[in-house]
Length: 317
Image 1: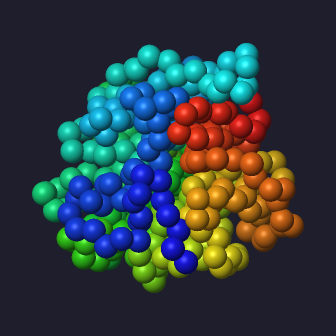
Image 2: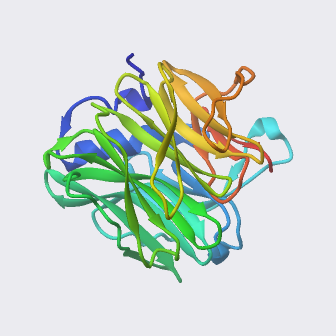
């Protein structure tokens, strides 16, 4: 099943070179804030004590698709008018790093993405921002992923962190054919690598969310089949369910009693609900969402709906 992605790009297209990899995997979530010419929204997070726990978004200049910045996102009195973006805050990312997602853990902001190694190579990378300084952090990248990107990131409790590490064995080919989990229980000091999925073909990126005392992960192969996995920091990953023709997963959002996965199905947003153990629940009510959906790690039950004109903060405020 061919599932179109925003901006006319598809993660299933076989692209070569580091720039192509970053384009295919990162620009999935690039959306204008309110209108053309305003910043693109790349990621969202809440709970960073370095910014008082406020809701932050990572933006990029729409002309250069770079010039990254952090901005506060605040609701307005009129929900239909969408949320307001604050002025850009400095974000001193390392040169050659292209961000994908972010999550806060205490006084550190963790940003996933890809680091350009050469003109035609990129490697999954993780950046830690603390005290207005950004630096690459240790991240286990398996030998089977010679070109790729770190995609989803999720905080687990007060000290735990999970990162999806994805890519393929060819250093010059930008294809997400396998996915791994990097799990830390001590704030990123040490990591464990857990295989998550192989044989994805030209797959889509993984989405993550805390679920009970573990981690919920949804992978998707090139045919749009989504597979749900449940992981514990100190145990192996277990497969819980497979949903055919589910489309491209955009966000996994954890609630008290379930996890919602929002997916792009040929330009239509669909919501599928699961228990914390990964079992599918009854069909969710029809989703009236439009555009791209972004989870907000650090704020359970909250997600952003970005329709190309407006940003709406949805779920639990």
